[in-house]
Image 1 (tube, helix red, strand yellow):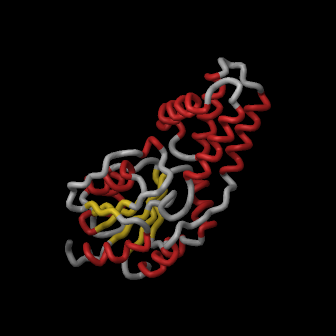
Image 2 (spheres, one colour):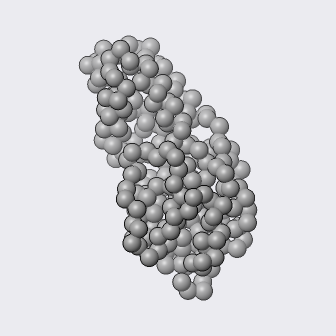
Length: 233
């Protein structure tokens, strides 16, 4: 690591605040609505297929999830889904867009201590309006030097962001709960990747830990981050 100022990137959903929990609760609500047409496990499989199929059309986030629920409901009922059920699915999506923002343990204190010592950049993907809403409601935005809301996360994303808001990926660290989106592509770009597991992770984000990568670290919670930054910075 050079002596340039370290740029520290943070994922938002399920790294700084709770998110996947609301998707799981809504999926349970969806299963109850369609209980007469499909078993919960089968419905979950069909919904995941629809979400993956629609990512390049709707992107990540609640709006795409809601449209995928409607599409799945039409498919599993062979077009016989009642209009009131469609209405309830739409209401469930709207409820998600209004859910409270609950920062995860150690998030606020860690950001407060790191602000000013490093360049802090939030790098999150999803619906622009919803991510902006959650950021505002969290009260965490004031700790960041830059906010990047992106359509997806890839090696190129981290090369661009860490080049624009820092001294390049080699002088940057990315912290997140998704190995697939936050850690592996950041390491591929030349940055450090610090994995903070969350108890709930969307199936689409699962990947194997790059355990042999010299720039990979794993911590139990954000309270351990300062120690890791001190070691690598």
